[in-house]
Amino acid sequence: MFQAEQQEKKILLDVQGLKKYYPIKSPLGKLGGIKNYVKAVNDVSFQLYEGETYGLVGESGCGKSTTGKTLMRLTDPTEGTAIYRNQDIFQQKGKGLKKMREEIQMVFQDPYSSLNPRKRIGNTLEEPLIIHSIGDKKDHTNKVMDIMGKVGLQADHYYRYPHEFSGGQRQRIGLARALIANPKLVICDEPVSALDVSIQSQIINLMQEIQAEYQLTYLFIAHDISVVRHISDRIGVMYLGRMMEEATTDELFANPLHPYTKALLSSVPIPNPKRKREKIQLKGELPSPLDPPTGCVFHTRCPFAMDRCKQDVPTKLQVNDKHVVACHLYD
Image 1: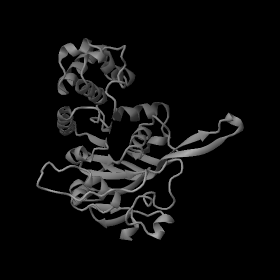
Image 2: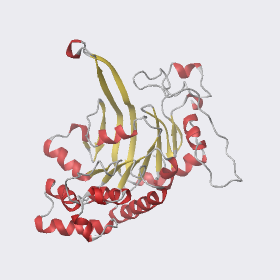
Image 3: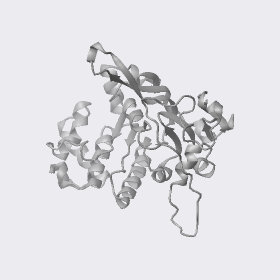
């Protein structure tokens, strides 16, 4: 636990040892068997506290979105546990999984492809109420109109189709669909990456207002660390399927420890021409998750790599009550 006030909060979700490997089958099919595995998520652990926003950042291909989709059971894990209110998400089936999905909702990255182009928005928003048997048909329209108003949509939008909306409006629809079932946890997978900067600000502010009103917990997945800084209470930094560093937002930006985190922060532009920041250039290319490096997966690009980095996987080290890092430099 990172802060004294965090110790008083209840853990809503406890993820331990999460792995997701995708099999690569031989061209010979069943005769050739499985040729290799894409190790999209490789032994990731973190905790979410009630009412907080946990930011998950890293460059494209590091496993952020796969982590979110696995927690939603849109894809099954290879290994690991995810304890939500004393129940393992990965062990749920049938009615148990359906009930859990009522309390854990997701906002998807693409605000257009996540909506059914053949359904009016009103019908799209009513669908979660029908699936989870929330209220009766008379209540559905009122609930939809209410949540549309909460996210800044107008009453006449009820009858429109997805192609009649802008990107920002579609993302508001996606947020409304996630909220209408009254969830406790919302997994946000790059919810603003496809939007203009001005629209990003509107959606982020809206999410914060709704979080305060509904007492929501967010898992906020993004590659833009500036956006994550604005909305998150704590941040986890991922690289090639592994968690490199975890800290409160203020602590991470004031005192980044892992070389990869330092490189990420150095790439963020400063809106002041008089201030300069030393940019850390990472050497080499991002390794393939088909064949990740041995030891620390970052050692092939790390300017401080040692011999032991090539052999030993670093364990998480508690630097202080706000900060955890997986790096041999701090052993």
